[in-house]
Image (cartoon, rainbow, N blue to C red):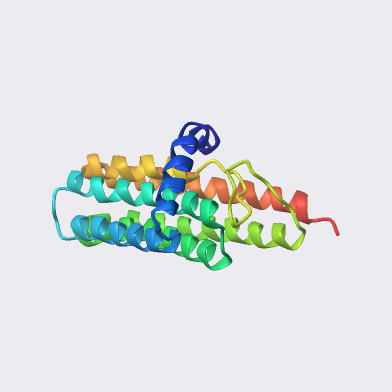
Length: 203
């Protein structure tokens, strides 16, 4: 929801960092994989019972890597595989954290399952919209220069980072945060379905 505003603040610094990293020979796909490894580390720390606040460092580093890999790709030249790898890594990360909280405490399992279900539904609406937008040659730069068509929604990357951060800072509140955030993911998916009906319902 506020990703557009956040991008205006962050993009200049990310663009400079991406240009520098590209000049040093860094590859966007390698940064994507490093970011995924950091996400796995964060989830592993949570699931293993470490203080959840400790997991914030690799969790937030994962999100920085997610922004940096795109900046490097724009500096060196984007590839279709790079865009594919990035979205797979993102979805893996978003699923890992709720799963880790379920592993940490079985009392979290139901809320984590609901959140994963809503991530699945929301992700399907996002990817389905992107596929049809590509089929029709639609373009947008509202969320930056992306490999996929990014349709806006109530729950986007910024809101997800805030929710995951809150879970790590207050793990005892994981369940209510997960239920509330999951409900908003469902609302986002439903809004996107209605939008798709308006945009793609006509021949």
